[in-house]
Amino acid sequence: MIILHTSDWHIGHNLYGRSRYEEFEAFFDWLIKCINDEGIEALIVSGDIFDTTNPSNRSLGIYYNFLWKLSETCCRYAIITGGNHDSPSLLDAPGEILRCMNLYVFGAVTGNISDHIIVLNNSKGIPGAVVCAVPYLRDRDIRRYKPGQNIEEKGIELMNAMGRYYQDIAGEAEKTVQDSGYDIPVIATGHLFAAGGMTTEGDGVRDLYVGKLSAFSPSGFSEFFDYVALGHLHMPQKSGSEYIRYSGAPLPIGFGEAKREKIVIRADFSSGKIPVLKEIPVPCFMPLITLQGDTGEITDKLRELLSSGEKCCVEIIYEGRAAAVEVNRRVTEMVKDSSVEILRIKNMRVAMESEESYESGITLEDLDEKEVLRRCLAVNDVPEEDYQELSEAYSEILAEIYEGDHQAE
Ligand SMILES: [Mn+2]
Image (tube, rainbow, N blue to C red; front, top):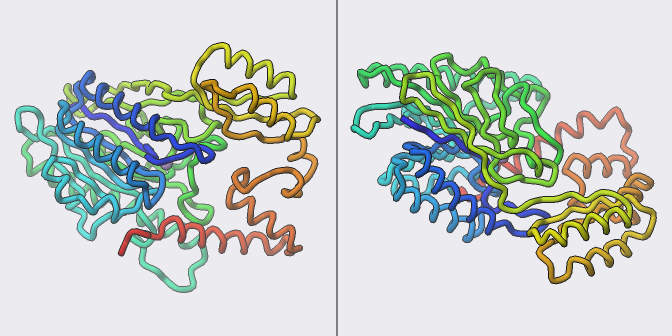
């Protein structure tokens, strides 16, 4: 059985308001070709299919178009699990019809653990692998609410509940393997932050859980799993073992991770339960380039970029002393009618000298939610000893907003 592991597609993601549909279409065309070239029999997608809980019609079109094309490849199965960015009910809505095509979708956990166990048959119709398809585990799905608990206690309980879920599903999978009569590999999926995981600034990875204990120890995965296909972290990485891996996002989600290599992972179980793993690089469909310096440096680098004729998106970090409006005017003039698009200009000098957003030209897009709160507390002269409690309460509200299933009705 040959499997392809990918995650964090974030279909519909835009960069500073610029849509990226063409990049997504190019990625899926490439993925179809890759699946055929690599002889993939099952595709596993570990969460964050869409960027938001209510994706646009065009995003939905890209997704379904891909699933339709997938059915014409050598890939006989797809296991698609929801991430923290996804709406469980939106993913699950076409679940029954997709199942007819051997496409298994799990937006959220059902009450019945055995629903999440799928036996994949090999090309001869004999059981070849078992998949434990575990989507992002929401607090409300696995933990019972107890009044009076503080955030830390809730966090510990949540991590324990996650550990129990993986142990229970491993137990269930073991029975399935025994019933099959074949000694076949077991693959688990997950969308979570594993302890020791790496992120970079501006990579778009959103905090999952409230409180300090928000990382899941990879030792919580049963040894019974031969491979764990993780999603959530956008940088490809191993998590405490060769066989517990994040594939990372196929497209850079921000300028911060533009230079990092993007991959999908091929796991070949043809010679037994220990897979042969291969990282397949994903091509760059739209270079994201950061130009940093004063007016001279920026215009020189921009001229070089323009002469290469390459299509790209640019972020400018301006460190000079002239007025930002002037730089803006100059670079806008330079890229007119070219294949270079400038997505944002950040004025470093003013940003460092002044915290006042009105004067510095810092917009809401430059700040994350926590920074907005920090500024709000400072402006309102809230005493510093209250910061901790207020920011924890604020994080709880944020989690509530992000995890609220707006498509539920
Ligand atoms: Mn993600």
